[in-house]
Length: 390
Image (tube, rainbow, N blue to C red; front, side):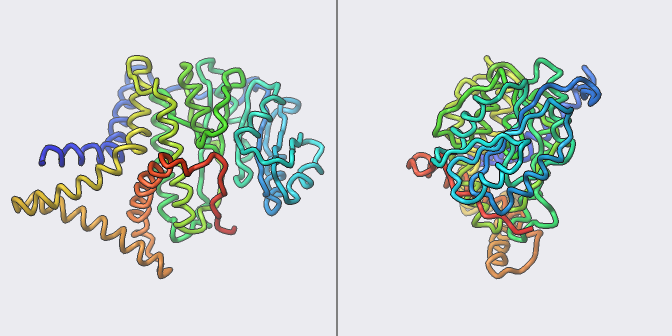
């Protein structure tokens, strides 16, 4: 029982903190042996690039998105813009069609984001394709910062950074901003060591020649598209200075809905990327993939529960002071999460308690997502989570 307890505790620790420590050490060793990876210059000849934005019933923000898009810096004659508004029943297609600089693709039939993206790819003739969401806003040099990395022929995809607008972070999702800062650090180290494990749909790009269509029922299309490129032996680079800013979820309920969907998509992705679980085929990539994604999306949330139950049983049987201290720490942490939940219900602002609350919600979402996936209740087409108003 004690052995199982320590094994569970170790996996939980490694998943959320230990991997970051190991990753940092490996990056430091790599720098000492090979030096820091060079950053490509912005003065080089940039590749031709197409920016694709899928927008579904976004009339309230589409004008702002268009203006943000038209303000992006990129060499004249090398940038193409495509907006896909399939299925939109509001004025989104009409508003986009007013801009001659943008190629509008629209059909009244809603077939889902993935098929819309595949349809848009048939219109692309450039070397690089960048995808971004309609409800995110890019910094002016985002495309330049992303495109420069394709000077390296070993780079197959480049992921930008997701930023939660701090002035608009809701009290209920204060943990979301903290989580993404930590994730950003891990992605920087992943990228420097070898490759990022998956790209975020808010802003990512691919080398056009390496793009592979994913199944229409794919839940995490951005993750799958980028990992299929990594599976071909190419690196996914993380470019934190190219970022997509978005508002936080309106409340924890909306954030939970998003996380459950991601968790369901995570299990689906693991089942479809079985080759990446074999370290003999992809030694470094498999190590990063299993450590950063697979453990989080599979056993770790269950091991958290197991570690707590075993800790209680051990203390009840032996009364060992050391195990009592560990149990006290667990109770204090989960108590803080419970307090965060109670205060969130009462709309009382104690942001420090929302970090453990968000952490627990995130892990609960994994369990709920696994159950939803195996019940067949998660479709690829989904309703967007509600976001805070600016």
